[in-house]
Length: 125
Length: 158
Image: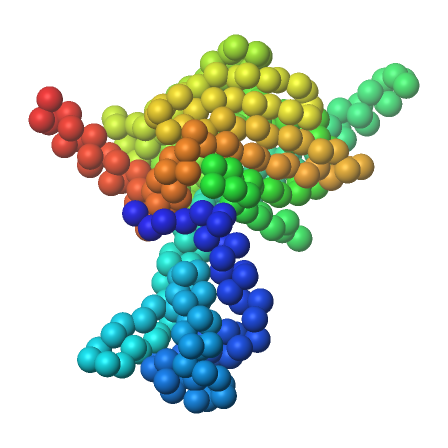
């Protein structure tokens, strides 16, 4: 079962609040990269970049894998996408119901207007 | 023009569905509380299912029971009790078909000719809400088809 929580979303938003981290995500969207490569591209120390990647990783936005001595980073959006897809399916279910409810409500409105007109014709207030 | 439906997970245990309807609250409320009206929209044609039973006793402590399915011989049952009934602005009911069922609160806010409907579902745990959402996987009719199969399996083994 995929874990999901409000704190998970909060972590995502906190992770995205930093320009460097957004840049890293953009970069990883184009191709996977090692921490050394990312540090070089964003003119940062290795330690500084490791911190940023750690924040992104905790938010589930990035996954890292150590192969030999190189830690490779890639986009880890799957978890968020999956959650969003679930919510969207639930929305579609209710949207279909509510479209049908619109039809019922429109019919009630028509009957209501006819009822009001008849009352007036009969001389009720 | 069609109004849009929004869904928001407000916390670990809460889901909120909202939608505006172009009618006064008393008419929208009527469509939620009269069985002959409710059964026309709760299971729309696109679900590919039909109602077998739709019973509502809309008063505090009164029960409701919906049964619908792909085949009339194997319906799914949904039932619970009304905790609050305040026409035409508020309904609260329980969902007792599962221990993970939510308490549903629906408010009807009249905004001068249009009505904002907000449906708030409070689940007993984060896991219960996760499970409901995960049940959406593959869409609703498929989910029910899977459940139908499961019930047949369970029935066969019993």
